[in-house]
Length: 191
Image 1 (tube, rainbow, N blue to C red):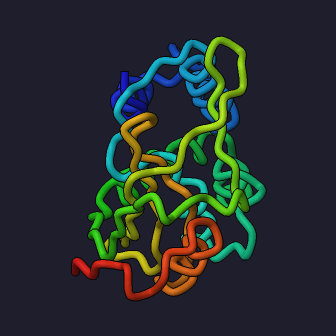
Image 2 (cartoon, rainbow, N blue to C red; image 1 turned 180 degrees about the horizontal axis):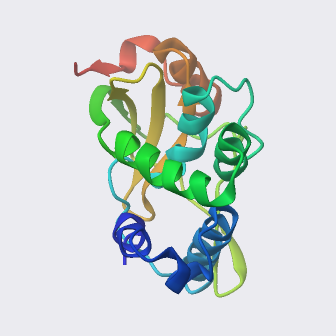
């Protein structure tokens, strides 16, 4: 079951799923959900926008310089009450889900774009750590009305994977250059 569908089930009856109305318990529940998916190698298509972006989006929403506290702790600190923070979470989740992805640039990698191995990507299969092959395509996406850009790597082997948030398109392109030596003239402008 996709994460947004699961959250829609929890929203009207959090006590049934979490034990009581608590943003901290919701975070633990979601962590368990993702742990179970990864451990059992269960692939579910991620919804748009990917829930993995929620953490950084919350930090920017509340103007926190660092998002290392976690979305649940940021909301809890801003609101001050576990039950109220859970209500605020669902309100903010609706705002977050209304963001519209716009593909800004893309590049298709060829054999000349071998990884510099600055970043190594792994997946665990049956408890074994396996290094992933390089992607076939890299995209830079902006979510409207937000500022900033996200990098996505696309691979037949492991699907679409978000690779981080960047304040500017240039910073995203610099990261791809560091990893795959993609030059600026190789990018295709889409929007």
